[in-house]
Image (cartoon, rainbow, N blue to C red; front, top):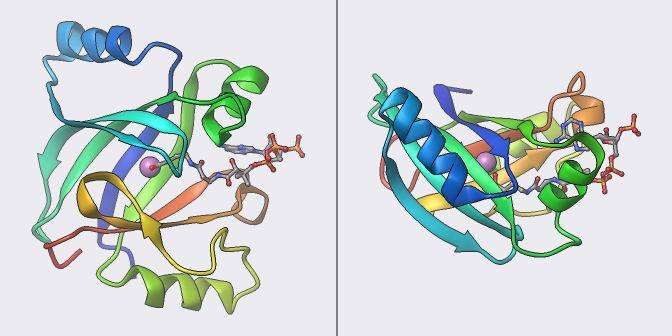
Amino acid sequence: MFTRIDHVGIACRDLDATVDFYRRTYGLEPTHIEVNEEQGVREAMLRVNGTDDGGASYVQLLQPVRDDSPVAKFLERNGEGLHHVAFGTPDVADTANTVREQGIRVLSAEPRPGSMGSRISFLHPKDCGGVLTEIVQAPHSDG
Ligand code: CMX
Ligand code: CO
């Protein structure tokens, strides 16, 4: 079902400063920066490594672009830090349905647009041992 860790999502207040921290400290460069209006974030994807299914693993840095977004609410409650874990899968809709059948809340009826043309679904953290879990289908890879 899951073929790799696609990314870990990290909530931050200042995207540019956080990107700079990852560059200075670890030598990681942003592969891609975009605004996802639906998710209410400006985000940077930092590629860490390729994977044996043809995809890759990233750090995703997230800054809220509006006060009522999930990441803004998270920052208010918890401050900066680890926000979610995202697993790669060859078929996000199929995986979401399989998980839904087990009684886990999938947070959208259909997959939504994610980073770099991917398709994503979120699982409720209260049904996943306290971990906000994202499922990602990469645009062109097989996972
Ligand atoms: N990780 C773990 N637990 C979390 C959480 C997180 N990121 N966010 C909220 N929770 C917990 C809270 O601690 C709270 O627990 P308690 O009831 O024990 O206090 C509970 O969930 C409800 O929290 P809330 O602040 O009232 O949050 P909401 O119910 O309004 O929203 C959630 C929570 C998961 C439904 C919402 O954040 C959501 O829809 N997330 C999916 C979309 C998203 O996160 N987008 C940004 C990332 C985009 C991307 O990756 O591309
Ligand atoms: Co994510």
